Image 1 (cartoon, rainbow over the protein chains, first blue to last red):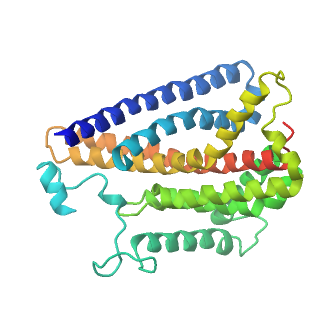
Image 2 (tube, chains in turn yellow, purple):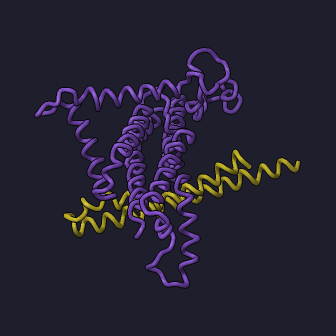
Length: 78
Length: 251
């Protein structure tokens, strides 16, 4: 019975960690949306900034990845 | 694995994660480090495909390139410009390594999208090795090029003095977490996308929603083609950023 409760906690924790993926989606959307609004104001400068866009997206996404990592650890390592 | 799929849900003929199983090519024996598996097969196909594109494709050296040579030249030019823009002129020395990384990842992702294919980059074991190789070589390079000055990367001189120790701790943590996020980003994106396609494909067994399911699989496949390229691009550009940090740790 005790083991079952621990397993329950693992699964609930993994599900809660999935909220972090949604938060990362908000972050990535924020970066891309702001890039687009800037790019529409000054389209000639936009082409040179795509690398910066992807770096920004990657950094915002990294924190969602840590949430995913926590979920993975809870499911398979704990 | 067949029994596992039947035991869980009666309607689903396969498990969405079955496609990521490492299986021996011949027979059913245990997998040792020397056993030829589906991973070995697809790694081999990737190498053959890259060689076919970059070596055979540019063999003619035509002034007016044919289609294959144009693709090879486009890929070369794109990565060359990326290294030049992000790292700077002195980073071009490391261009061959970055080009190798990009070609390997983009081919692994794209070939993994073929039906019945095995996506090599969906395994953290593969992407982890790639990310650790980048992390270790960049760290060693930073110390060789700059000596102890490389540690200035963690000591943010533009911040107020009181904040610097706190920032240093955060910088050190974020530095050592790099290979983790670097590898899991690629593996997670590949694995999640393929699993979603398989889940939608599983819905096709129910007659009422099968047209929706087929549309969804088509749409997800289109998205996955985009993701396969973008993830290879992101992995490469992050490698360039880390390399820039190692060569010019000042800012």
